[in-house]
Image 1 (tube, rainbow, N blue to C red):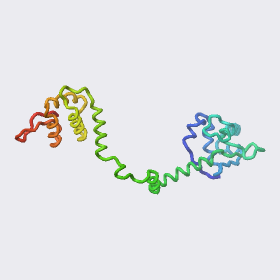
Image 2 (cartoon, rainbow, N blue to C red):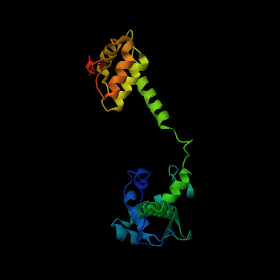
Image 3 (cartoon, rainbow, N blue to C red):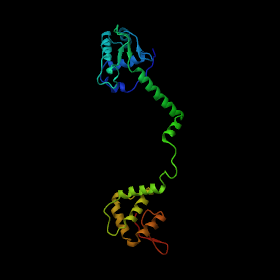
Length: 229
């Protein structure tokens, strides 16, 4: 006997769900069987181990040997057990023991590789060679996509006289500085920018160049007047 068996949550989520004592007996059978799934013991032995009456163990084993049309496995028509020897009614083989041992082995191997970092090369190979500068999207392309998305997000009904291109530039700047114009304030911000008329582009450029969070119009003496925050 192996004394050990991997357990997966499929035990509880499959057709054993809600079936007692079957769902309690099954993990014990897995642990008592050898690596090939052989469980060459009698119902009396299992009754002694589980504390169940012999009659209950016999019925349980019969259910495990019966075809299960709802089983995830189609091997042996979904039966969990088959008899080692058809000439006796005890001693069984767990049908999918080897399958789940291999599944557990592969999972354990993957975890060890992740922990040690030995899977890094395989992951790099799977991703393929690094892209060339020509293949990688440029910062300008990324900024253009970002700006496009933000423009769509603020595509409200514009106020008369508003320069939409300049407005989008201002709106994107505020978002990039982590101080976005809040939705309730957008209409007022649009109206305020529109008041600058033909100076809208100059006002926005001046405000961005000076890292302002509001709109300031430059003056010849170097001072700025009028703002919206």
